[in-house]
Length: 510
Ligand SMILES: Cc1cc2nc3c(=O)[nH]c(=O)nc-3n(C[C@H](O)[C@H](O)[C@H](O)COP(=O)(O)OP(=O)(O)OC[C@H]3O[C@@H](n4cnc5c(N)ncnc54)[C@H](O)[C@@H]3O)c2cc1C
Ligand code: SF4
Image (tube, rainbow, N blue to C red; front, side, top):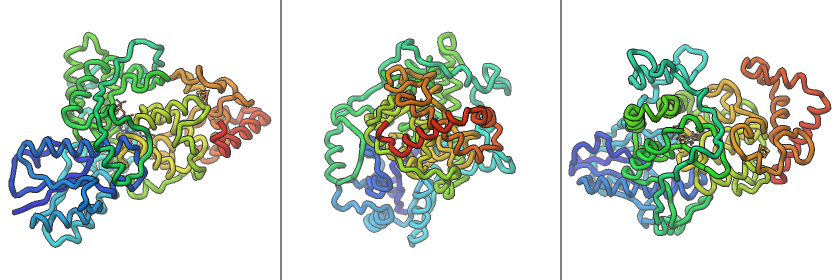
């Protein structure tokens, strides 16, 4: 029976069991669609990375004998809407069955259910065979529990999948080595250059431009640096094991003006597009570690495994547990607009200028830049989470809603009222200065709280605590901060609040 099998842009899993056998009756359908480029404004590097990876995936599998119907962004007969594309493919091929892999986005899941209910041929949905967990697994695990604590989920995952376990106990005698992972990077050890590709992407860039896709961010047509095939992705993974793993954990939270990537893996795009599976990434990293235990400490490796086996799967589970309501949550009732400098990086605040500038230049910022610089500022200025979400969803190479929204609206903006984080991730300049060198080169003083040259984060921090104190009054983890607030001299507090009001109303002045 002739079949159409749909593959979405983030379903580039060439190890999927669909491809175990070659079958002339099966046509794989892929499309570069305006529906996907336009649901939010994306960074140009993100659009290029997805389309190039899709094209390479098709080439790789065509060479293995599989048949494809592929719509390029520039094809005149591309309908750009999923329902029309599916309809067209069925008509063209005379297929009697339509199959798809379960999408990771709620929006696409709903759209595909509707498409299937409108079709008069047989339909079937398949697992993507990518994640460790099924969509509902986290929900079932936390059934009847008050708090969805990531650490509990992570320990269950370690045991269930027998990862870093020795005789039923965690390897190294501890589940978590997080306290080892909070070092500032002092200029050494030397950071190897990232595994780069220097691809020439001028022709696809031209196609995207000609198609009129509205994007933002910067790109160099002769110097594109992201993995866009399985072979590239494997090479980034190898590079990480050999060059970066040895210090990954130590400097996971560090920030530096001269080093964008530090010891981070840059594997999120390869995994989120499914060119690599989380299982093979963890296996490869552990294999390398166990062969090099004399050089690499367990704390470097556990930190990495926790991000992928713990946080990544946890965020996906939260997404499927809480959607579609999640995307509307604004528990702190934050409604200020996103400042214009998020689109230009032009601000005198050195930490933001670097972290946003880098995001616009490279479609990348590491976790602490996303959380404790950009997200911290957005939360302290009480910015509307819809606007914050749209920016994060557009700007990062790895941003797909299931992992973006849970991190942004949940972990970073506390707009979910504490489903993901037990307290808001807010800080004054103190933390930013402790973890990086931004403050040294800033025109503001990180120690000053008031006055023209005082760091805006300081005023914003106390103002946030004061404005949200009623909301957090029963949160034990906020008790210490709120006690300090109570002890603040009222005149000083008023000065801080006046300065914060100025920063919030005139963000582009600072
Ligand atoms: C506000 C905010 C928004 C974010 N948006 C995204 C997003 O859209 N897409 C995305 O993949 N990650 C997101 N993250 C998580 C994290 O910042 C990125 O996964 C990471 O920076 C990617 O770079 P890397 O591959 O070098 O990561 P590394 O530091 O090398 O970490 C290894 C891997 O662990 C996983 N990981 C680490 N932290 C998380 C996390 N909190 N949630 C899920 N997976 C994690 C990623 O797959 C990552 O590739 C966000 C974090 C914050 C605070
Ligand atoms: S002084 Fe304030 S604005 Fe400047 S880099 Fe430090 S935290 Fe950022």
